[in-house]
Image 1 (cartoon, rainbow, N blue to C red):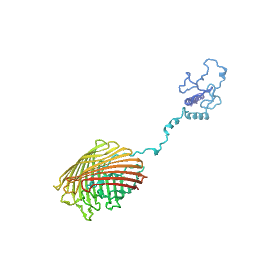
Image 2: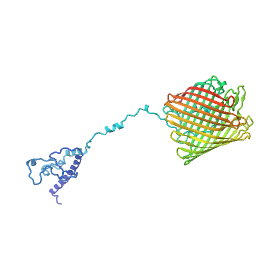
Image 3: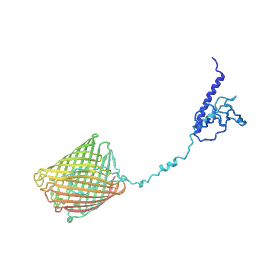
Length: 567
């Protein structure tokens, strides 16, 4: 095999090394352009092209210095004596002509490579001012003081559907005229009770003890009225489940009003409602409701018409079971109702007992409702209630059969016109036909309304109205047409201080007898919450009933001051 000529091997090696040196020199030039320009040394190896501009392309051979003499011109001694850099980019010793000097090695200088890599790794130099000086005033703003931030109450977005009042409920004006005081006020979240956790239920118990004075605790005529110190004890229990699908909730309340100076006027009262919602599937819902009402008859009631030594009790309780099915925007519901009313015997002032067992009755009803959602803010509906009332005794003390059948069609709508107005309103008529031919049938208009208006974040207005045909024990009278309406305004003076003003109106018209009653009530309540579990409450109640029946009119003023504890 022929040996490779020594001269050829040497020329090929120098060519490869020269090409590598040129490529590394181009990278160094690119890094040099990223840094601010500096004065070039007089003995620089690389120089711009003949045009004077750096085109950024690698150069395979050394360019002449810009100060090199023109070809063919004689060189001066100064130019001849100028020495060039004896070491190239790879650290190889070269002569003035670029050839390797005798005795020099072909191995690169490690220090030259290290300096070159360090120069390539250096980041570009920043120019201009730092951006933190511009951004800091915009993003580093101190947060506002939370104590000065106003707290906005969450607006109420809906109200429960008005339930059918028990049969005897409208015969006790106190249960309607004092409705504003029995409704729980809206409470700021910072002072709202947290309740107790019991399994999957949240329980909110409370107890209230008040002391005050009542000018007419027996609710009799002004001539017979005897004032007394009033002691009221009241307890409430609200609960709600935390289930993922269905729900069980309820509100139970009971109290006792004691008058030490007039024990005959002492009386209990209470009301409650328990609701169970079972979500069978996305479109089917089963509702079960239980309710009760406990009140007392006033001594001057036209239905009692006797001088009693104590106020007889009236108890009404019932249940409702229903199914609701949704067909897109159409909602159909079917509900069955069962209610019972019982009247306690009255003890007269002469010691005898007046039986009221002939007034006990049961009511069975079937309600159908069809609603269509026109838009998310309004859903009109048609509601039809058919019911029958059956007394325990076939005839009453006057020899009259009071069993009756009724039908009540109504038209209305549920609405949420804005974030601040929501409720339900309906109107129709009720027709009742009685079994006894001595009692004529009754037809009366029916209006029901429940409205909540959040006038401002601090003010809430509630309006309720109801009309109905109720039973009576007066001879030759088929029934009583009753109208009731209440309005209530609650305003928060402070986060923990609220004032509630309310008014109620009641009118009763007895059929075929010359008996009419009109009632009015006014209430004022001030609630001051020390913390989540302790509240001081002061209230004033004014009640007045004007009746065409002798001895049935009365007026009373009641002041109460107490403490309410929410464990």
